[in-house]
Amino acid sequence: MTFKPAIWYPIAVVLSVFNLVSVAIVAEPWHATIHAALALGFGLWAQRLRQRPDRSELPARLEALEAELDTLQQQLSETQERLDFAERLLAKGPGTRRADPQR
Image (cartoon, rainbow, N blue to C red; front, side, top):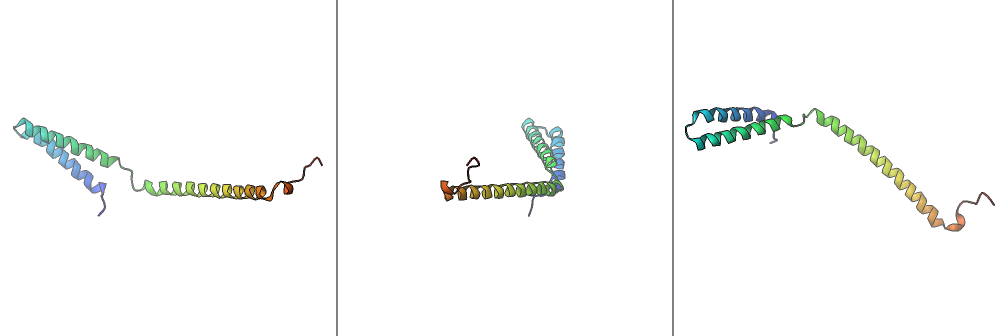
């Protein structure tokens, strides 16, 4: 079962409004304080549920990450090829390097 903000947002709003109305109805101050705290908590939760990124944004962000990953893999491959080339040159020794152009 997945958490669906689209379902929980209206529930959080209703619970917040219910507790806010209950503050005016109840007689005891401690009881009203509890309802006020619950109204605030449910209201903040509803606000947070509303601010979550939309599912429609996720595929575009995933595509951008995949493109960046491809670029990084290509750069790593090129770097490894250059390192292999440098290692082969160093392994040949000083006698087999390029000829001096002044000779």
